[in-house]
Length: 272
Image (tube, rainbow, N blue to C red; front, top):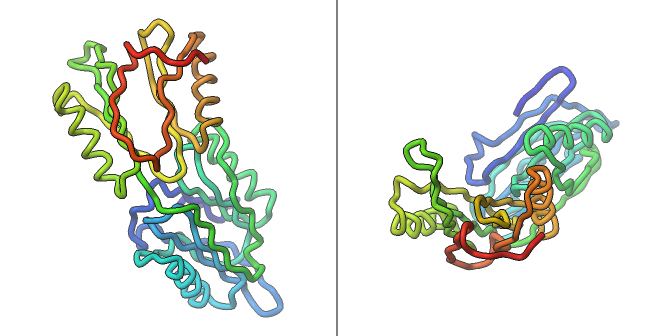
């Protein structure tokens, strides 16, 4: 979380595998009604894609307790608070990489602007805004899209500063934990080209992965976004910016079980 005189609370959760102490964000917004300040709390369960919001409560303790109870009723035992404070307007949604992002400001307009500005500064694009809430209003929200599943990619990295890189990518999806996804992908990469020559990337939730290559087979890459349409659009944008013709080699959802090898330098794809 960062704060400044014009920003009441901004936070980004890069992974939900965090402790409550590390993730709790205490903000400085205060909205007072006839019954006193309105309190809110946001809880998550790392095993689920989504969040739980309670707002408009008369005390911080009540908001926190109800948010955790709401989360627990969804079947989770590892619920934790990620945010708790007083009033304001909450803009909450997901980044292209599937990270939960939220901004609290004193007005709806400032919250929307800050949400977009923060996303653009970090990702160079637009995040998906899921909720815009007046936190002084009494409400309880359970927003769950399903169990969280993880996907990992292992890939060859340049050797000895030569710039030469293996074009193969090992994609593993649908795993219950990030560690399992990364371990499985890295094992397959290490068996092929040696562990010291492998890097990895992990994503989760509702994200989709696109693997692509240049039409001449001299380069390749990957993009992650919240839908097939968005991730294909991201690939198309990059290729046009680089002035190259690209082919789509693979599309995969993070939640889909798979273990597969792709060679971006040799496998032909679908022209974009």
